[in-house]
Image (cartoon, helix red, strand yellow):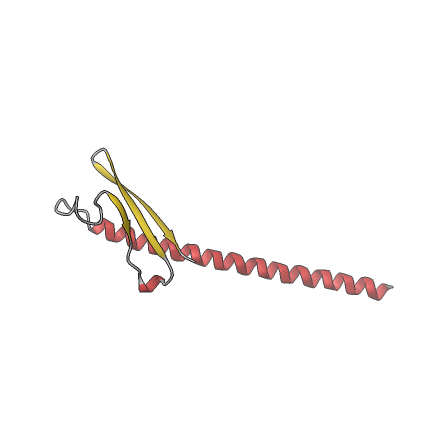
Length: 100
C-alpha cells in the first residue's frame, strides 16, 4: 500500500514538472513571436519616417488609404499592412503586423 502512495506522489510530481515545462515552452514561443513582430513593426515605421517629404506627401507610402507591406526575407511568414488617415494637418498611421 505504501508503494502505491509513493508511486502516485512521484507520478504527480513528474506530471507537474512536465506540464510546467510545456507551459514555459509555449510562453517562450509566444514571446519570440511578439519580439519578431515588434522588430518588423519598427523597421516598417522607420521606413515610413524616412519617407516624410512634401514631395511624396500625397503619392508615397504616407498617402491616405490602405497599404500592404511587401514581404521581407528577414521576417519570413510575417505580413503587415497599414492605414493612413488625415488628422488635422498630420497623418495618422495604424499598422497591423501578423507573425505566426
